[in-house]
Length: 434
Image (cartoon, rainbow, N blue to C red; front, side):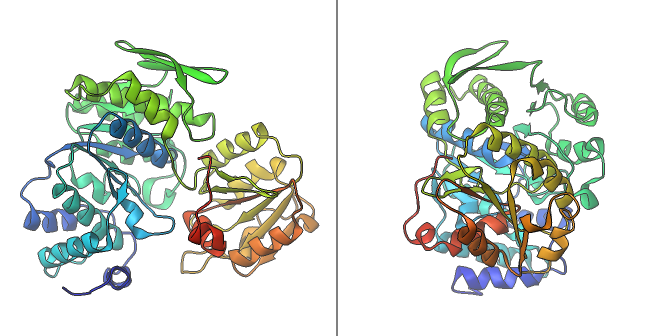
């Protein structure tokens, strides 16, 4: 074996390929063909693409399918605290040994073919799943869809979550252009479910060309909220008085509605163990770190990986809906390729004080650059900059009093950094409401 530990493998992979992002399927296809003969995996596959709501949708699907008794695997990215979080079977993260052994098989098969960090992860996850006798895998696209490594594998059902402007350099600067990339996960005659009431027209056009049945929110399935429950129906099924998903935010109803449409298609295709009890249990017990994850205490902490305008709009709505007797202090760090100004403009009305920090690494944005998105819009005494995000958090905590809340957001890297910075979070995980 090339390396004996997971950290060694990951450090090597980070430098193996000439660029961190290199869209295209030729290299991963060539390696996979050395490992296995077929791009059709030996279990059902649901592939999830979109700008916002992917992680929540994966978690909701997995929770319901597991509650129904199916052996369910999930591949997601990025991770928060441990790389192993990316590869999960039946709710259990893959072990270091499993991942290292999969990396070795990928490394042997690739020969002199260069792979990126994400491509290595994707091939390793698929290899692990093929050895686990699973019933279904839920694969989350990393970026885009059409040229993402996950798209090497044929999806039985494609789920496209709300599409916004993100990764515009790679995917295009309009929803219609980005929609073309997301629609690339569809397969001929296999269904696609869209979480949005009005997905980009390009998504619908591509579905029509492929002969893929498209199920659109508000048209082919509907959800209605009613106080502390919600109702869902499509042409075949109807569920009333469903428990609210255990992920905070009214937008989780939108995610859950699309997930139930996927569930109904899976049930119709032979997964007959899925019943209303499994749906209710799955909704009530779903968990997902870093999505408006609220930790109660004298000073409430909220962790959210939001990093684009659409996500910020959801976040602003939640902050408005959930009362806070004191002030809201935001701790923010973001990557350079994100439109931080658009995010800030949405959140300025609901945040009292801003504590900006830098992120380490080549993609990290400095606190000073972030601050330009706020200057002239709010008073300077509300803007605080620190060299690194951990220092920004410490400053926010020093300025907070009982009854206040601290919102940590802007990136997976931001949330990870502060979770690691708070000893209790690592040594004795705190209970979370999402």
